[in-house]
Amino acid sequence: MKSLFFLSLLTVAWSSCNYITLRRHLNVNVDDVKTYDQSGAFEKSYFINTEKIINAVTENVNTEGGSIEKLEIESIQITVGLLPNNTASSVHNVHVRLGNGFVQAGESLVKLDTSRLPINSATVFLVNNFMIFKGVSILKTELVKKLATGQFEFFELKLAGTIPAGQVFRGSMKLIIKASMDVVTCERVPIGLGPSECMIKTMVLPFD
Image 1: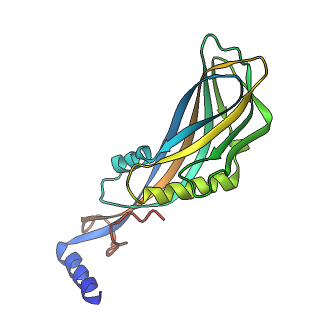
Image 2: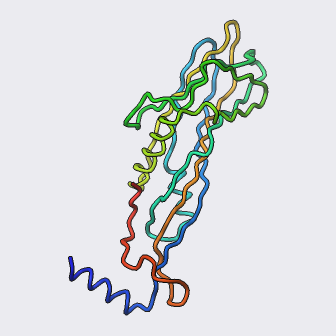
Image 3: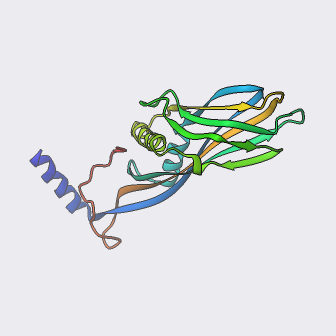
């Protein structure tokens, strides 16, 4: 190991290059939409595809690897679109839970037990005030772990609610999670362009 480390030092010295830390702040939206023809209580599965996040990173970070220093869930939105034959005026008891793909499936992400969402032809609900900290923390942790693989994977979120008696909801609901992250990389540049801040750092994807 010591000889390999020494060889790495010699390689860096002979290359006439510095290695510098670069940080990029990225905003990523992950969303899924489902159509409804529904009365009474309902539950539908929504999916987060890590492909969108991975593509956002690779499109903005021109290196072989990097690490996520910080991932935050900025907001959670529910967007409603109605069809002309919809008769529902509101949705009650909206509840978003973690589903398949999460170690702690069943934990609540959003819960509106005592509030209703009035709906019209195009409604956007920002449900940040109803987010559950524990569920959000699990979502962040599991996303970061899965991003380490670099492979496209799906997480399931279960959205449940109730349509008032005598009404039928016809239309769609989109679940949108707005996330942000700082991607930190160690990149090689010609001497003079920056200090050697991370000269021997291995270029892998340690998203943990």
